[in-house]
Length: 159
Length: 374
Ligand code: SF4
Ligand code: SF4
Ligand code: SF4
Ligand code: SF4
Image (cartoon, rainbow over all chains, first blue to last red; front, top):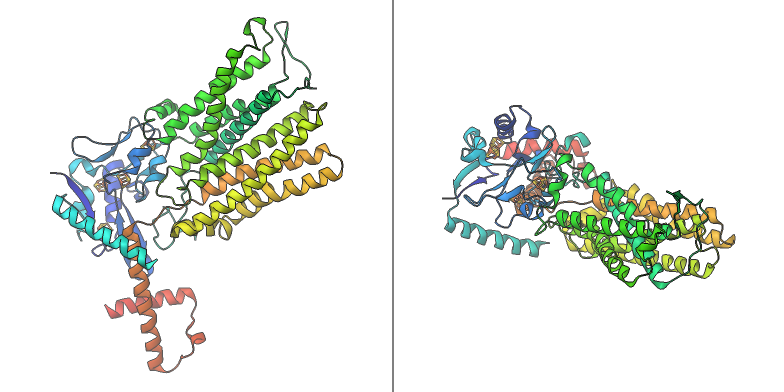
């Protein structure tokens, strides 16, 4: 079963532990600017939105990558970046609507969430379970898509 | 203030323009566009069969052969493109892997551009070298040479348009994702390119016998500048109307942080200076120095056009961010109502003017009220 990361902004407290954990796990340095998850803040009203790769179905990042380093793993459907092929052109960073892949200044290539090879560290360290790793249940997804579509329609009226 | 924004979208209240592609990519786009544009114009001049004077530059002899430099001033476009292409490599994280950049031409415009540019550079340079070499066995007048000429011409057009399509292919940035952008960059490539041709022909006295051809080129150039202005206006107008972040981008470019690039670089250097200087020059019977200065400012304007478009690109907000934004606004509205009520109850501050506190105090007020009400 395909699993995916989901985020719940209502639970997130903005502690940014996930950023730290991700960076330590992957780079050994406790440097949030090298992590693969970022918390967006609306500081003055206390909204926090952890953002990680949405594993898009039609992913812009794989489409624009000139080297095929950023590709969908045919086995489990995850979008991953092949570190040996990436040339660090940053096209995927610009293309991703969620501001996801990040350029690693140390290693000079682009990094993205790789789900920690199936054992997401950010999930196990987040006390609030604001990020969670769940089965991408097809029915659930259909429901979510419906809600999202409704939301888009609504937005058009508001605008 | 600026140090706060580590990542463009980290602070959701202030959507930041992208900062991944900067001056280096602008130089790349500019040189590629300008070189391709000048090659297009140069090839047209060549095909129209305008007679060219041998340039006034000193002649060069190579291995005892006298090189023919007549066509160089109209055919040097590929050199510009091949200077520009390494700038793309310069921007890469790992530069020695640049050859990988052509592996995915099926979907990626960066890869396609890599191929288009290299094809153009190869064919263009071959034609340039052929026009220089005086050897008999090249049969310089042979009709067969039309084939590579046409190929190079097509790829020059491709290069000029590609610089726009590269940005257009980014679907998440509304300012770039419009068909007008390739058109704008194509027109700009042609106008800067023909200006560069005018400068090089003036500098080498190529048309010194034939002022008619130069006049035609000049008026063509002026028409192109006017068209460029119209396309730029339409482009900004459509981006402004299209989406929220398109609007933000245009605002940022016109009135915000980047206004110096827009008004100083694009409008002043790219449009106003050249027109004024050219008019003064025509007043002084074609003063070459003035034409040169106006040409150079126009070329700078072409660069700033790319830089401005690049640096004002903002990503669209994701639905999640929009949702939070709306909730934020609603909460802020509620806060405002609450605060006014509180103020009313105390009966101290009732007029609107009095309740206007400075931003910082208001923010901390908001925070306090949130913790109080929850
Ligand atoms: S660790 Fe959890 S609660 Fe803390 S910032 Fe990350 S997602 Fe939010
Ligand atoms: S990196 Fe961005 S575009 Fe690519 S799959 Fe993840 S969220 Fe989607
Ligand atoms: S930075 Fe790497 S993964 Fe991203 S588009 Fe360029 S080559 Fe592909
Ligand atoms: S799953 Fe792993 S790689 Fe992805 S954000 Fe969490 S810790 Fe980082």
